[in-house]
Amino acid sequence: MTPEQLRNVVRTVVAAAVDRGALAVEVPDEVVVERPKNRAHGDYATNIALRLAKAAGRPPREVAELLAGDLAAQPGIAAVDVAGPGFLNITLAQGALGRIAVDAVTAGAAYGRTEVLAGQRLNLEFVSSNPTGPVHIGGTRWAAVGDALGRLLEASGADVTREFYLNDAGAQIDRFAKSLHAAALGRPVPEDGYAGSYIGEIARQVVAREPGLLDRPADEQLAVFRAHGVELMVAEIRSSLVALGVEFDVFFSETSLHESGALEKAVARLREQGHVFEHDGAVWLRTTDFGDDKDRVLIRADGEPTYFAADCAYYLDKRARGFDRVVIMLASDHSGYVGRYKALVAATGDDPDAHLEILIGQLVNLLRDGEPVRMSKRAGNVVTLDDLVEAIGVDATRYALARASVDQQIDVDVDQWTRKTNDNPVFYVQYAHARISSVLRNATDLGLALGEARDVDVTQLVHERESDLLRAIGEFPRVLTAAAELRAPHRVARYLEELAGTYHRFYDSCRVLPRGDEEATALTTARLWLCAATATVLRNGLDVLGVSAPERM
Image (cartoon, rainbow, N blue to C red; front, side, top):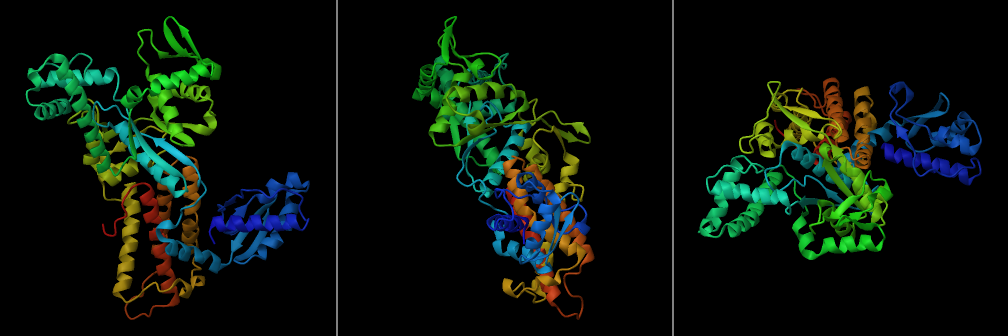
């Protein structure tokens, strides 16, 4: 019996008490079931009696005692004790706890997945780096976390579209084109241009694509460098992301908003709703009406639209595509962006709390020998996605960047993340999976098989370490759900590390395979199922993070 199944049992018992008139309350939609810190307090505990007491007009312990007898009579529950002010401590029948292993193995890749977010269409925008250079280490963090979050949301039933917004219009693209042009002509980089050897590489590719380009008029040359340069840079960005295991459903071009008339339509809509005014020759959106610290310019006095105008059009485009919620992941230097974007959403007539979510992430530092690594081979003064992957590998990159809460600045130490020891978190988790795989291979060599689920005697699993491992496996669906709802993939990583440690302690205390001439027993089979269940959860959890689960290390 998993915690989720136990929650349903508790809710059923409350509903039965209400139906027979023993409790005059509304049956709650959510029931909290947690593992007690002290194992002597049972397998699980719930505060349902404390939550219902006020509505019932009765003391919490009285409500708890009323529910305790009914709960204890449910299949799979061995005992229920009332503790403290009204907590219910629940001890499962041993077979009920052991069935967690069978459920996990039987469900396979589906174990842990739920439908709690079913029906939600989410647009998840992340990375969205300017196509003027390689993805830097900060964008790499968003790539790892964003992709993991997308996987988490899908594991909870949501319909997720991963989107990359290409800022391929505006002054930064002009500077990019001028930088490429200068490199092709062998001239110094413009004062406000882009440096790094990648500029020369892309310039050479553009010239190779367009023979005779440098003999054309200067304005034609710039136009070609602009178009082909952006295309080549985007292709390189996509290639780097794919190498990290991150693929997007949509690459959305800012230029398309300008060319389609979407900006004009967005301004017209906002004007119709009464939120647009003109001042000093410019067109403004009165965002102060919606909590912003100042009003924002949509169209400058020279007639040029601002980035904010493009943001308005882009948001409306996403909503027109049918997304219920727009989730945007931004770096910490964009934190001031939140207020104006919420005001924008409110000005369109939407509810920012319902239709918008902005996640802000902190910086990443790459260290080697305890010192910051500052110089990239190709990008000059920044560390790129490719640099990080080359330094520590794909699995370590993804795990290291997703392991910490995004609101924390993190240091990625090359020495730690390349070490094949237990102080390397990704190695520690992957090694647990490889260790189990070895056990299962050895079992096969001995002619031992898991057999049919109906034949395994899970009541054999009575050792304290077995119970610890079963409860940990049972927590996996709740961990995934909480991580998805809180937008916190790091919770999955920390859970996997705890699970790996719990498995290692089990393995050290409980012999799985028979030795020498010993005969395999029902306990042997039950422990093999427990090992296989643990491997299933490790594999599923690593998959959520986009990290491999090796069978040999």
